[in-house]
Amino acid sequence: MGLLSFLTTNPTAFVIIALALTLSLTAHEFAHAYTADRLGDPTPRRMGRVTLNPLAHLDPFGVILLLVAGFGFARPVPVNFNNLGRWGMVAVAAAGPISNILIALLCVVLLKVLPETNLGDTILGIVASINVVLAVFNLIPIPLLDGSRILAGIFPNTLGRSLMEFERLPYAFLIVMGFILLARGPLSNIIGTVQGWLFGLAGV
Image 1 (cartoon, rainbow, N blue to C red):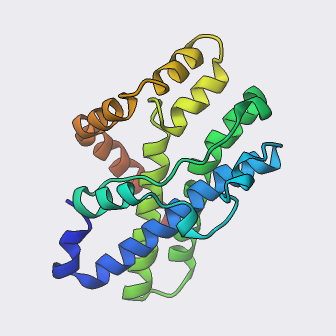
Image 2 (cartoon, one colour; image 1 turned 180 degrees about the vertical axis):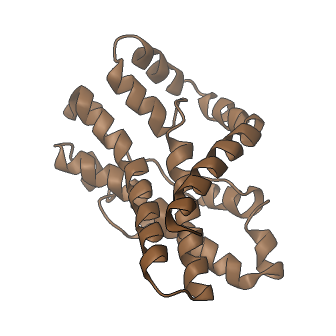
């Protein structure tokens, strides 16, 4: 179910989710770009990606998928792994999911300490949920996702080489999208478990 379904049934939810997704995807890609820049790769800065401006990170096709299908993506941050080295590659790949984990934890802390309000709790809950989805999803160790890049850095001469070769295939994107569609059930269960644990910490 895409975001467009909320536009007529619950416009408030549509606005909150759209803004939360925009900010969360932006934070994720900025974390990749900032980390690469700090570790010595000038590529993201040359491409204008070391910024919190959402327009620099959102992908038009990815946004359309979010609206109509309920899942999508932002523009991957271009990096030159030759400038980063093995562990720099791991750090850059992990930076995106870590940013989402930190945002989710911050929301949980705010839910715990701030006075209860319907709108405030709803916004924090949605932001936390979205960031859990982004963190867990991107840590899946399949090509084109951050989990794959982390594995490629940890095992550069074996598994990493195979993953990088797969990413160069012209139809790699379609294969990954097909896998995600087929695995939506198990992925939803994993994400739901993590969200339940996280909200349990906040007592909500």
